[in-house]
Image (cartoon, rainbow, N blue to C red; front, side, top):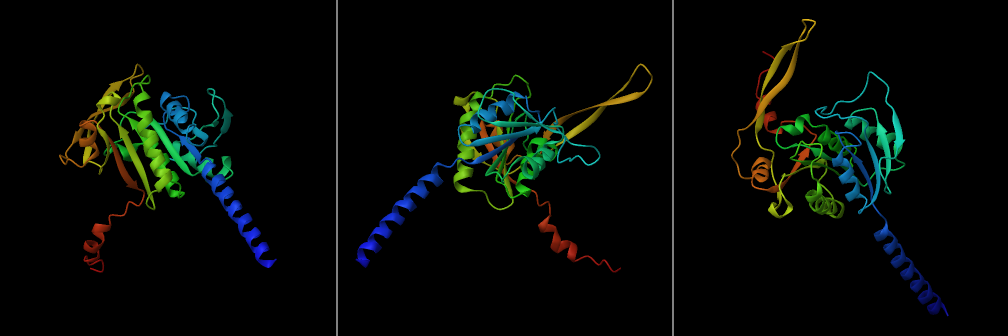
Length: 282
């Protein structure tokens, strides 16, 4: 009799375990979507549509363009978050008066009832390769998520036009996102993904890269308004000083999707030993 009871319970728990496994496998990931071009930008609308095929999507994005904001946060004025409907879809959306980093902070602390399984930012209208990552609101949103221990990816297309065609980006974005969800990311690392502005058949594949050493040679176009007051427009040209074939700039020039792992720890670890040799007591 006892053996029959044990067998019955064993069978019951086996069925329960299989059921729980199926439920776990069928549970959709919660994906936070944001950007720096604003909640109505074509890039984020494309990213939302792709993410809706993968998981449950909540959007918290700026109510107006925030390009070049870097990791700025709002500390001297109030923030507003409003639930909105931009287009049809299963996603839930909120428009935020703040910066991209503000959007992630508010999403985690106020909007969501649990930490998301993934944060994706973009698709940015224009490049965020090389030194551009420093200035990018797109990537700062992803880095803010990384600070919160949320796996995060920033996506950019090398086309600054508002009417850019993002269709060829979709399959590459989905491939990268599924790999992150299935494999996870190293601790304190987020991905900076840039997609060349060529047709899908011209893209050779996805390449893991390092950030190219490059900068902007900047100038200011000085002008005078009708009231006699001087004002300036920032101009300049991008200069790549790095000719390595393992960089994001090389990959993009050769029609690869570049994927650069980046971190928010800015410590120059290689310099610590040298600085420790200095005599600070002199």
